[in-house]
Image 1 (cartoon, helix red, strand yellow):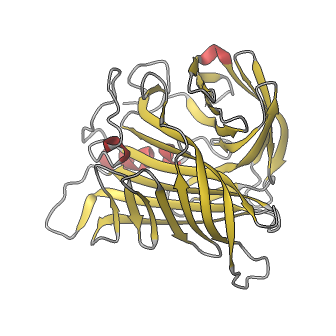
Image 2: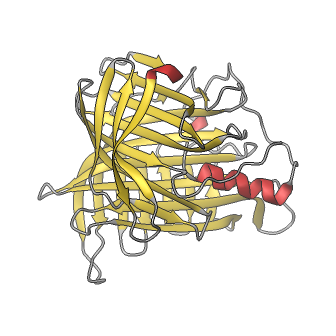
Amino acid sequence: MRALLFALMLMSMTAFAGEPKFAPVAPGHVIDWPKDSGAHPPYRTEWWYATGWLETAEHQPLGFQITFFRSNTGKKHGKSAFDPSQLVIAHAALSDPAYGRLAHDQNIARQGFGLAYAKEGNTDVKLDAWRMSRAAHGSYTVIADAAGFALHLTFTPTQPPMFQGEGGYSRKGPSPEQASYYYSEPQLKVTGSVVRPSASGKESAGVAVTGRAWLDHEWSSTLLPSDAAGWDWLGANLDDGSALMAFKVRARDGHSVWAHAALRDRDGRTRQFGPGDVEFTPEREWRSPRTNTTYPVAMNLRVGGMRWRLTPLIDDQELDSRDSTGALYWEGAVTLDGDGGKGRGYLELTGYAKTIEIEKR
């Protein structure tokens, strides 16, 4: 799940009002790895989403996020070199305590001319100078030369993929069709360099970094429940090698429409947790000085009998993508501390600025 899911689906509904038909998500599907790491054009929405914690040689912490989206617009591909049936969107962000707030950039284009694409069969997505590609041996190369900062990173897997839900079929609501195909690659070893944002506006030199990352890949065609207002989502690498994913889809009054969590221990055993076993409880709020939106940036998370406190690297990790998709949300690096162990991850908070109305079909 990503914050732009609401906006991308809204764009599709606005433009095509009841047509066309997209490939369905259904239980029983077996993810074909690594072929399914590539694009799935018949589905309405798809994203490759990488987050992580980095450290400079001086042991300064940084958080990063880069996401590529593919959206099936429903239009037919004619004779043009551009493919109007597929839209590619990219977002990148860097959280730097020295900078004091989130630096972020975004881009959007129709697929075509080799400038923007999402290829099938293996991860290879590109938008102008931004690219995420997977080598045959499994490592990823990520390049994003953004406005005011840059990411040049390599992700090396240390664990097999983590198939979310029932073998990759991940429910997002009480109805079976409210679902996605979803897998994660946690505990990715990161090496590379970043250009950090500068408060003075002067161009900064690249610095070497190491760290750990989490990669999500999801594709879906179905709307979320009609009463969904937003969600809280967490992906976290725990210090002992475990991996934790948890989310809650919130209704307009704040109650949980659906929730799920998965915890894979360091020995590879995975436990799944249903709606009654997952609880996000706000502990401290932060108000954005730019949008006046209030976000619960410090949270308490309960998964089964385990509890964690989530603490942000910095409070100001609000991402404003209204220029490309209309989404406004908080997405940032957090630490985890609790009886379930310590770790680092990313927390995403959507629907706090404005509930996007999802029309009923």
